[in-house]
Length: 156
Image (tube, rainbow, N blue to C red):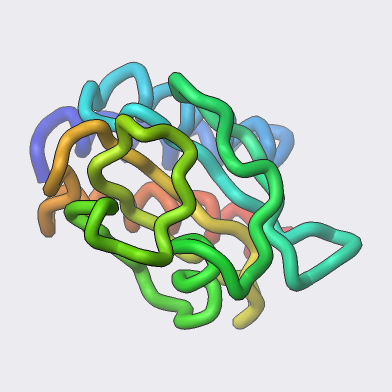
């Protein structure tokens, strides 16, 4: 893991020890990832809608475009990651028919599902204006960031 990844991950882990709410933790993660990793052009969390478990609704996010506010679990890359329970990395969204465009500038995306007590609670979604942004080391880092949120949510 590169140094900036290690520093950010440590920051998130330390912040999670004292932060009052999951939302505050997610806000910090989105802001810092967007600020520090220049290829992360949109960083956000999608949360399971408390009134409809078949819908992901946008949570804290930072980026240069307005995201899809509500995504049915059977739709898009976020829905595919939710259904499969697996991390989804797309190196070129133009070749991915499930991609729901938030911006025509997006070239690659990673979606990491976050489970609490074996139930999908949220997803960390990051989009980049550069193809093939999410190498194995980037994927490992994004997954580690999602685990910070997962562990925080699991305490509740």
